[in-house]
Length: 278
Ligand SMILES: [Zn+2]
Image (tube, rainbow, N blue to C red; front, side, top):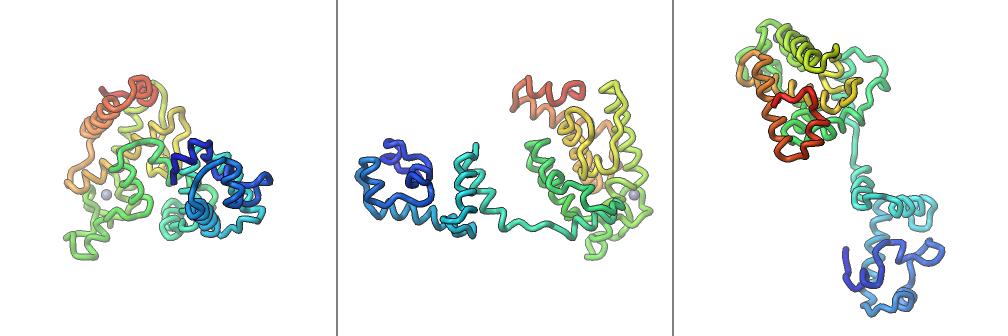
């Protein structure tokens, strides 16, 4: 909501519409008198009503302490629009408890607090701007990647066995971690990372699956690579080819070339450094 005439009078924040105590809106007459502004009373009451409706929508009465808290937070927020967006979606958020408990079960994690789910869901967005990768990790972590086991059940695959080893009934964990061909690939990746960085790099199962960020400097860079690996494994599954390190390095090179073209040289070298394949 933006009124040029209001802005010209220095009225930019909700705070500007409040009385001296900051606990209620100015009356129309007080507002006109305070700012010496010529406006229709409907505009003024329409605006204050919309703000009140927002706070009511947040189940917060404007006279309560809680309301004062939210006004205070709003005033202090560096990004007010982001603050309002977060407040609005907060009520609609639900925890995907079924997928979370399946992961805990698969990974044999007994204690819920060992996994920082908030971090798990936010890591992809810190590591990459590629929506195909963030979308992939979203589906992966919510267990929405179709395995042969599922495809066979719905009649879309002739076999429920793993595409790579043709032995195990393919579960998500088998496909991205346990399969012997995938294990070989992860080991090759570790070895390549260690050689490039001239220091031993060990990626745990939780790191590789994106459940925990790797304990290294530039953890977002590692997260990006490990995310790209999972995406690459899924592509190989669709093409029914074994994942090879040479093909993966080509993929990584494409990603880095794209980032180099759209970003600053300084941020590129800070992110990729010795791991640059270009
Ligand atoms: Zn397999």
